[in-house]
Image: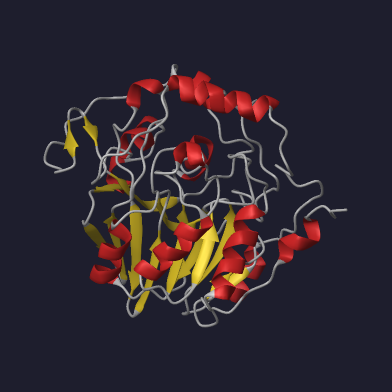
Length: 351
């Protein structure tokens, strides 16, 4: 409800992106047409959140968070690529002894308001103030759980590059980020920054921080390549044929980081079920799978642990390597073998 109330308040600047072949009628489009909830559907969904009896929507005890400190990061930093889950879809990457953030959200709530909206289950493993020097920030789209104004404001002067989809730069400029730091990419465009190549690839989703700016900015997934290592980050996406195309063009991937959470039959075309997440990983020719977009915010009707439980079971049945780190736990690209069902200790005991 908080997001909807904020929608009417949010203003946007208009810009022409007609040079992009998926921008027309004043907005961006997916490759294949999709249908999204109208206002009535959204209102009915919100009523379900308020009145429908739900099973374990939030944890009943504090979840495990492994603290990240500047000292620990300095000790663990090396020439080898590593990453840390910060919560939801936020990640800290260590690439050739430089740090990058993906979709960083440090706020207490993902909402236009600080006093209402989905609240974190856990604190980030590190505070914004304690973060090391950040070389760049990668953003997948402008929804509140992926693009956080408070976080961007805090990091604006401490970051060299902001790499974002077309149109998202307007938010950053409005929040005081210098124009020369912002790099906006269309699908299939890339940017080379030293040894790192970032390629914006398609996703099946939508954008907007208000009623008036629906699909005025682009959404994307990302191919992250540094020498011989290739990582794929899905951002938010429904399952679509684009995963296979990306896998054929840029795969195989050493690691796929795919959304797995906040799914519902009400919005099946823009978020994946665990079964679809696993198929996307296969389409992408991934070697190991890290599931994100879960375990931090209550954004759908399923239990907080269901995405992890379902996906891990499916992956083990198909003998697919899956990573299930605790928040703040290090993942090394040289040892992609972490599989622990840590969440089961925090699930209620069923009679």
